Length: 130
Image (cartoon, rainbow, N blue to C red; front, top):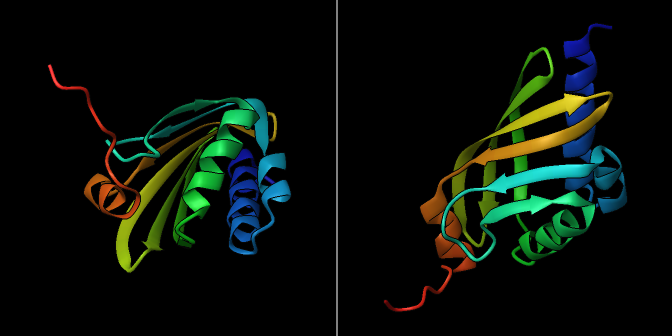
């Protein structure tokens, strides 16, 4: 198989494992130094480094029992873009998750999502008054 096909297969396995609730299988697909970027100002927004922080993020994400439907995967070299639909707490949005893969492991994920929806579902971070 080509690099793109291998990478698509890796990301597909991740979405299947997430959908079935197999967090151990999901985490096995990530490099130990994974970087995950969740944009916006929701309580789960931020940049997470390593499997420990990523596990905490996924646990908080799971509190709202989200479902993710993968619609299409696009691959170019070490990059795979997943076009998805996300549903949580009665809200729905279309996302694009960008995976960077090296040596058969995901090393970086950048989520492009409806940040306003994420704030409605998970709440907004509180900022100190100036």
